[in-house]
Length: 231
Length: 127
Image 1 (cartoon, rainbow over the protein chains, first blue to last red):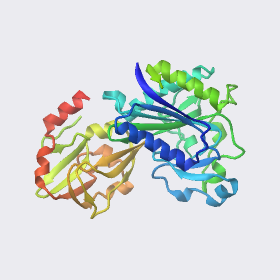
Image 2: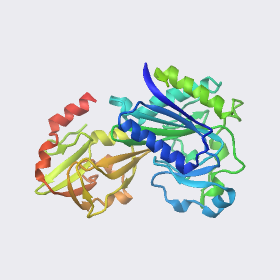
Image 3: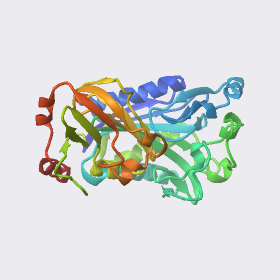
């Protein structure tokens, strides 16, 4: 059984930028030899995160300011994602050897833990594969990738990675509920996207939507699937 | 999986083609395969001074960002601007049109510390 650090930051009150710094710090610690870590947190107030290299001009900053949405940049890849009614996880691990160490390999290993956690709440999720019909537009939630988990054909969890010096940071969001607005309000040209049709929340699935309850289930999913001992 | 004999390699999965004091650098076939489809390459600036082992570029693949380290110390004298609009060359021709940058070496003796094709192949097979 491997020893992992568990950081419950659900109530730490940090802003979006601080959360991104905390995730990077987690990765830096693992690069320096620290044990792997699972960090759980929320964005309060809401934040719109952009992918590492995504053009910031996709954001309607005036609307974000009016709605009190902080705009932050993720260190990881991917597209714009609105955070506020979800549970976010961050995992930092040494890059596994062999196939498990590839981008897809790490997604697959961690997906098993996330799926096991969601199963404890009665949600049957599975890994989404690439889907040529989606992926257009600047919003993350409409692009279906191997990194994502879906229930039926709707995304319930999206994730992204940063790989640095033999270690991997992966973070992602489990949709718990909806805010009163979505990414289409915050982007200049969101394109012809149907966020509600492409995604599903825990509440809509009739599953627990309390972040503490979902966090507890995820921790058990990691414990059971990856044979880790949290401290 | 290709490991061209005429190249040298770093343990961080970069390849190096030596031409006098210049070294052309890219990521290996193994690395591009592990990362998946490359969608963006953040190239270093021409003129940037780089140190062996330090980060000097980033590659974004589908749902992942990975750092690229310079295997050699020197100055970046050329970057592959083809990748700005066509980053897929990193996947399609990792040892050819997918090269990333060229360094003018400060100390050609650093090349001796790089792996040859056989040693790099062993490293990959052990991973």
